[in-house]
Image (cartoon, rainbow, N blue to C red; front, top):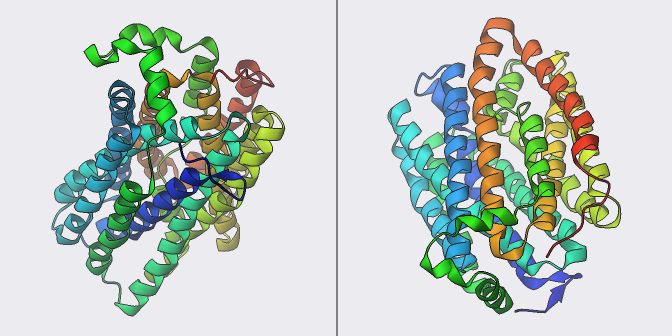
Length: 403
């Protein structure tokens, strides 16, 4: 294993973080524009966009259980991760030739499929590499640099949209370049930790014969309580397209719409690493509670004001809750699962997450169009508030770290 450290964290963590930066830069060049592209050029309604968002995210999350189990089964996180990044690069140019909503739907399904392949082995690999007392910092750094990539991609997208007179398809073509660089950096810059393969063979020698369903029994009560809390909280969490729609209602110029995703990702960037470090020093529960408060504040602002500045602050806080809750939840998952089934554990976590986001996004469009945006965001605030109570019921102040 590469034991060299950069600024106190293992070198492979930094490499994986920069891989995430590049892939997010590529992704934001496509998806920050997708809602308005589908509406203005393909004639899609808000409900259609929301339901497509929810479904393709559901696909992305559901495939994560497959990729997690596969990474455990073949004892090679990097190979599965490479397949995901390679497919993500190849699919980007197909957005540029879209002529219908149906075409976008299927290309997005494939793109989200590639995204789903990446998540579980990546988070399992980070958990394998990260020292026990630095997991929060390692997951936080990865989240921060990924969102830094999204911020860079957003600024680049705004500039290119202004320069090209809103040429969506040019942006979709250019998104291929950073995705390819991410794939190459992963292949040549990251080595699978040798100790991981050794431990996997010792702990689960029968994996070569197929999936061992008894291994699911190694997922303890603490893990399943984290999953239950994830379900409750993420019923309040619909797709980010609705943040875009909320800002567009104020009359923001099309070229500046990517600014919504810039603020969203800045919110994640500023909190993920420092709060990840903080969660290594105090209880993760306390930091997760702060993430829930960010969500409540974001939804109250976006649902109950017409002032563009306050709405944009709401977008920033929405990003802050994403950076906080996602970093802390994956740290908790890594803490509570044995190494030999860590990929599977992340796969289950992300699949449950996907089901919740699909359900919430499916109904969000109907609620918005029938009752208005205020009702949608206020419902989200109420569910987030309820989640705070369940946090203290389900998650102890300190969780024993298994591996």
